Amino acid sequence: MKLKGGTSDTSKRITGWRRVPDWFAGTWHKENTTRYVEGRPVSYQTRADLITGYQQDAKGRIWQPTFTSVAKVETDDYVEYQMPQRKTIYENYSTKYVSFSLSTRVRVDKETNQIMSSFQQEDLSVSTPQPDGTVKAVVECRVFNQNGKVKFEDTIVVIEEKLEDFNPIDEFNGFDYRQNFIQFLQSKGHPELIPPDRPKSILTATQQRILSNEASFNRLPTAKSASKFDEQE
Image 1 (cartoon, one colour):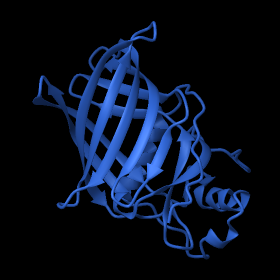
Image 2 (tube, rainbow, N blue to C red; image 1 turned 120 degrees about the vertical axis):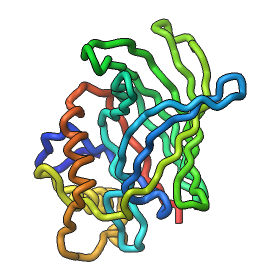
Image 3 (cartoon, helix red, strand yellow; image 1 turned 90 degrees about the vertical axis):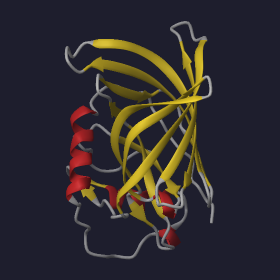
Image 4 (cartoon, helix red, strand yellow; image 1 turned 45 degrees about the horizontal axis):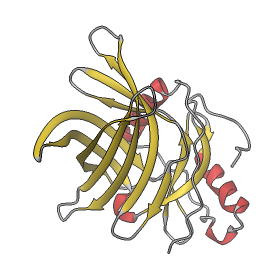
């Protein structure tokens, strides 16, 4: 989907919108990642915050823009930038949320600001809600060397803790997400899903911080990504 109207200085380019489960909508924090080495769990810090769900349709279902963007994960020793290299595939179910992606990862030493390593990684992630309100993501990873051969395979587990409930993001840095969402629904032939008029939402301080941080590092070049229109009830 091509954007109509202005662009934002966040360097994000929206390619469509995808539905997310109600239980996965909100603002989240992940602190650690657990790898299983010879069956034994090994945890290490991978601090990151994220927003899931920007808009809500007329049926009350929540949607996330799919855009070309760079993800940032911080550890004690380095910062990792994750740049998508092809379409990410999403599947939305009532009890799980599945994604499949390929990205180039660049790790930068926090002390010297020098690149430590770069590689490509393929991820199959399955997120499920937990009884305590967290979301558990189990990710099957494959890391490739420069010749495209599998270097190693890994299974990691991430627990995401909810910071805030869903709050619509209508506008940020001059970009109108609500209008773009409406144009998306119109372009897909679903005017009945266009949400009714309401007062413009106000970003929380946490949303403002996350979006501002994304804007500061999201100017790295990335490949085009897209998602399909999800009709699941």
